[in-house]
Image 1: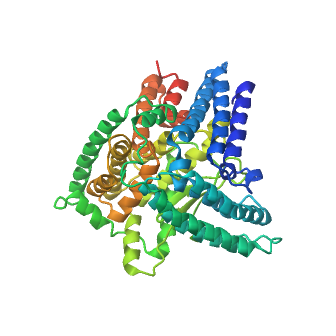
Image 2: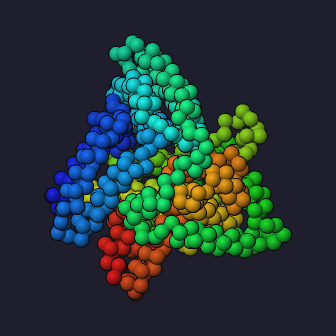
Image 3: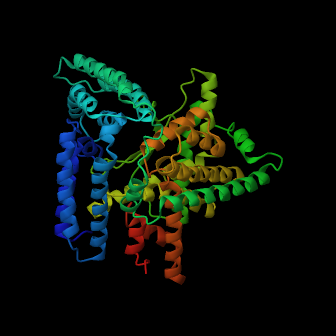
Length: 537
């Protein structure tokens, strides 16, 4: 789609630098040439990266495309580069968050283990190279990290435990044929990972319980350049608060229709006892995914890409980091176009733990989960974006659009009659309540001095999570500023865009037409879609 050769060269220059900085990101995108390397994020390396990124940003700023589509792509590309600069220069996760380093290294192994488009020999050689590089990589991390907030250290410690299991899995599945010393390489890497974790508490400062917060200026920077939003933290706080009240009222009304004598939180708790048996869990999700796809196709709600979505049990090496379920899109540049929806069945060794885990797979909740992750949610959206002729729209996007689209789809499918029971509608609104609470937690933790414990209590009070689940959620929120609000705020932006599109289209309006118009922009910010649809006047 992009006909501007100058812009194409700028996009390619940015990607070349991106893959050089982060070879694991290149592997994740399906580029096998970078599979044997890990990145490096020492202070000296980051200074060089920043200089190169700023040079590219200056060139993008000076470029003047001829068409509106190319100008939209240029704006998206510039926002992407500015956010990359901001992250390394202002937020500095490579200095403050040990999980930043661990996730890079472990993702580098996971992508090789899961890849279906590389030969076994290639994957084994690349995995061995990355495992061999791990001790030096972690030593660089130890020498770079300083004053890490305690919540980041706690998260990194948990990630490292999962990392030991992942290395064992790689050592079993991807054994290089020509490296007899591979077992020793694995042993040294695991010892380095253990030593890295043991040294982490020394980097945690005394006190500073909100040291994880990025602050209002950085928060607004991401709102503006990552999500192309003009909203402020204060406005979003108020929006989250109002949305919580609205959804709580809806939940009370729906619960009254199901059982007038039971308050909605108690009804939810009771209904969670309706779940599939362990041996049918994956089958039930697969059936729900098929139902969602069939509904979209029968109603003509959106074009369905030719890309399979496999519903499978979560591989053993991923279960520590996927306790329930998760979607994984195909790599952008891979010939393998299939996606995965992982479902993690309880192992059954502890009957009490099994029952608690199955309650998170309530049969009334599964339809919304399936459409959110599959059709017309993430899988349909992301695979469609990956086929776009514009390289920018294939690779650049904002979670405001990605997560907002999936949550919008939950609601839109309900409007179109997908949910067949009041219980299913009740659980979909519960999902919206959770996303509304996330808006206030995101803003509160990073701009209003909200303490970790306060956030946990709010999640328990409003959404009724158990404490361990709530703590795990909030740990992630602390490390991912301006992400959690994307679900509810993205939904709001897309609903407003639909209203503007409907008004402009008049008698020619169709829901499918709106969805096709959105999908033409990939996962670019909604405000850029509005610009491209000429609805900003």
